[in-house]
Length: 380
Image (tube, rainbow, N blue to C red):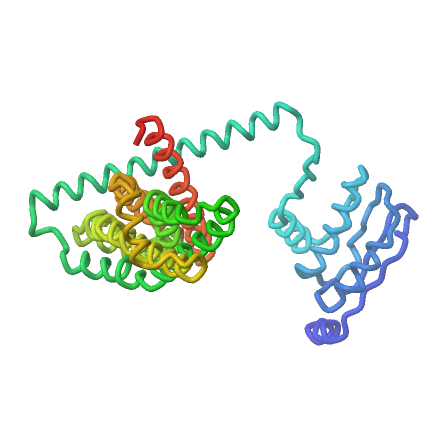
């Protein structure tokens, strides 16, 4: 008997024909993965109607054969018909039932048209999710302030080495790209401004245009956007990788507070270094504008400096610098929060890193708009 089974497995065959009583379809032979393609094609050619499938002649069935039978069953059920499986041995019936339970539930196609209620529901869910995200960021802000206060009260717990390291990472290493960006922005402002102001014989006012635009808005805003892109992603990737490797759980086991060890040095380094980067951006932007004004309009560096000192108030510099610590807090908190949301897979790490960059840039722009409205109302 074993020899017959081995021979049948070596040369698997099956047959499909009308049942002996003329009512239904009878399957016989071996229903295995070696014949699954032909079996699936044969069952797929059956007419869509109520069908009784007799498996009394089946000598062997594996999961591939059971999958083909259940494929026929689902095809008939989707058309409102039924498949009655009879004659299966106990082993075959159990296997078919196991495969049936393991198959995913068919997902109903969603209607492309949404009612007003559906759209209102989606809008409400988005508002609630946004509010929850905002509350989570406020929670992380409070956590940072609390841990920083504890470090001030107990200086021995403060990690100065980590702070210096992160100051180098977020500040010193960002100087080249920030300087280049600001220099080119100054060049573009001078070139475009001179082209417009020359029409009115007011070329000298290009100095005021460059100074106010860079010192008040563009210098710190574009610097913050660049820092958000490189630093928020770095914070998320570093903390998220530690969370994936369960290093944060190990820190808690050792009695170390992740907020003190990970959040405080990173966010504080950003708060300290972003104003410095903003000042560097202002200087480089003015330098680029001065060079282009000299080349395009013939405004000498001495004249540019004189006009800059006489026509630009120090309040413009202060307005720009006031924004820097706030932008730094926003970028650092969003990056650390996103890192703590990473799950135990690489896909989650990539998704959270991307979300952190987008959220940080968006939040910085919104905060800058809020500052602009506030200073305009205050008359500053």
